[in-house]
Image (cartoon, rainbow, N blue to C red; front, side):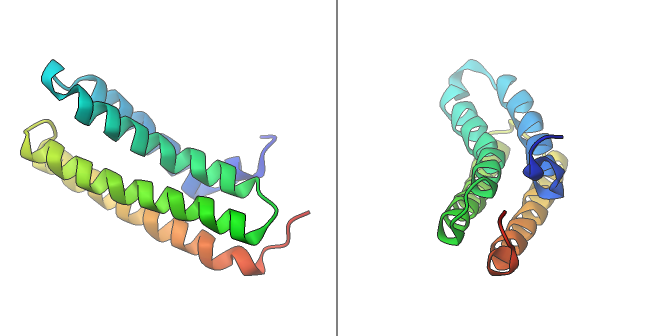
Length: 121
């Protein structure tokens, strides 16, 4: 893999989650396209901001992108709750996705805490 961020477990998990949520959102009924679109964008934003943040040299820039990734994960939590309330996601799937988002947020927090310790080439 040519890019360092591709070796990060949090990045790989974020991509897997985005892939899952994009697939699920595509199956939402026609009247829920706005919710599907927002969920898709928020999910994709997690992985893309981890990647972009990892490509930045300045610690402040890295932290900003990782913070945006974490914010997008939080956004997914709210969107999943709305999806559950509309019976677009069942309770079991909601619990699994919620747990994965929680773990991804914890991992992103670790990235943010590690910024001062990491030396960028």
